Length: 489
Ligand SMILES: Cc1ncc(COP(=O)(O)O)c(C=O)c1O
Image (cartoon, rainbow, N blue to C red; front, side, top):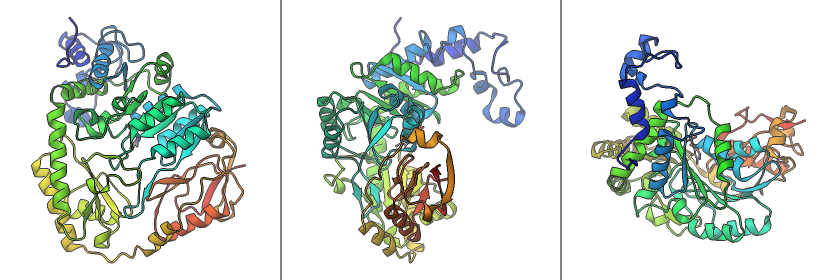
């Protein structure tokens, strides 16, 4: 009998195997938890450990699915409107690697936003592709990178008609979505596939109040972190694709390449169950999270010194849609840096945010939150505002921003050639003219100033020093103080 969305075929097959009382002479070595040290066994419990199973004839094979895993993936495809869906136990990172490896090969161009997550730079480094960068819009008041505009995409595809695809982030970490439908039309007119990093959007399909999910906007392939926003365990993502512009056999081969031959069955079952939960209750749960987030946003905006952007930003450059469940609270009005606010919220008020940057702290409201948590969060922010007004002087940061960003540096080598070539470490101040072998990004706004393979200029060195003096957080280089930098020999 065919499965319905209420079924969980993978979990059912696993439970059936355990209930059969089989004596396991196979991996994993802890044998249903019996061989596991009590320190962990007592926490996880025998029932969960019994489900830590291995590749067995009746449990199918993630890499060549034809049984219960195929049934589970087919249900996910039906739910999300994909031609094919694949489970990833290596997060969206693994999904992005596989997508990039699928659409581009060594030496091929791929168009990506400059504020790409490190998994995108990792993907192009793995396959030797040449990234062509598009600049995202930046909101200087918030210190955040927003989306890339359709105009920017148009220019990129026009200037690089030989590119093998365009990668778009939908939405950003902070919930900002660009006009994906228009971008898809532009890119398809140039006969290229649209690849979407939808790490923060596995719930978009379940409410008309959220930005369009990639597939609904006509994109060809996307990866979603089911674990980040909805009910799967950490590390669990899905890759969805439409046939036509993407080779499905190649995608399958690339997913094999970037994942273990021993994928964890509990992780995979969590994807099966998360899909069932979304199919049966997704609309209600996502609407509830949106409702809570909107209430929280309104309450926060009543607190003097705090600001939480929302619909007021719609229509700004790079802001076509907004996922309200990402609640960005700008704390600079309190004279606090985001990192200071994060520390106080955690250690004084027992609230942990998702991340902080120079001006902001980010809260994620999901189907796991309720009214009590929402009230506690607003109360903590009210106390923060009442008790911790700081005296931070942001003028140096603002001055640095006023200078504008240096141009994207000259690309001399592919990221792969730079990363895997012979490198050495030299003083950053003396690096002008050398080819960078690492990523250097300042937060905010999280747009790399240097990527592997790019020429380091006097202008970039001076700009980095300015941002450092202003106290911006550096991410990427081995020497996080940036006294030295890794360059190609
Ligand atoms: C925009 C973006 N893309 C991709 C990823 C990678 O996702 P995962 O953690 O599921 O590997 C992240 C993770 O934070 C992300 O923020």
